[in-house]
Length: 336
Ligand code: FES
Image (cartoon, rainbow, N blue to C red; front, side, top):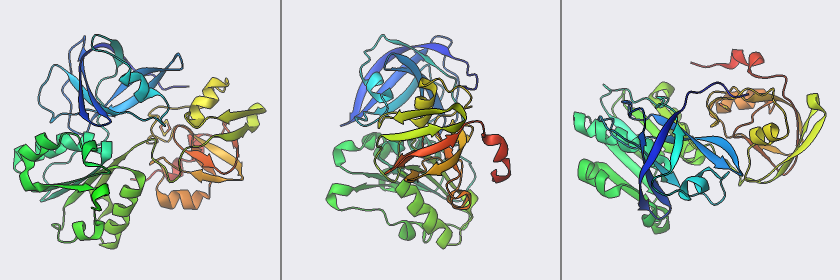
């Protein structure tokens, strides 16, 4: 049961390849583009296996007034089909898009900023870096990719940031050292990170080890990013007396919906709001928690009793859940 969203038609105006596997899509909303803050994202309706689904993409821009919305989409062969759908489109296509949503806000006024991008995680940080540079803020952007050909927007970033942009290419043996990068930052510096789960966790550990305030490390993550590759798994929904299979390219939430389970609330569909969290009665494998609604500590305290169905998965086993026990009994875990 999706939380209601309002949609507006938009024309796909232009497509540009900006890296080996990253394509920039430019939409003109029929009702006009709304101003947005850097770090905001857009929800886009996509078609997967003939059915409408929703995907969220960071808006690529520095927040200046514009008549278009730009999103950059990595072509994920192992994804759930949303990127494949977008990559199949030609200019002139019409889609439904939401208004911009500001869930990864940039707080101005800090004495220093460290921005960390891993792969397609550059999309929200691109605008932040340009906006901070324009304001004369002290900043560095560290941008990591496996291959140089996977770096998007490098020229634009270099033109604005100069040597405040540092590139790390995995195939050249270049790695970001979180402790080294954090050392020497101003006391009230802020860190913004978007990239794979492992990169975020490395920085969170180093940030905590340096005794820095957790509220000054802000992050956005990818719904598809987990500790293990996605694989098929079996689920028993005890309160519906139902067994189902979650395909490797499908979310647990989608499998529930496809099988007529309509009592699971959901909204963000990328592991942030916690609405889709359900009770785990039994798991004989390992839950690959991919949400950011629960902290690492909360996941440990919960001992595998909850799973965010929109993003989290099971590896090497199966799951028994009760979808009637949702967020209402997890409220005490809400953290500031
Ligand atoms: S729908 Fe928001 S965390 Fe799953």
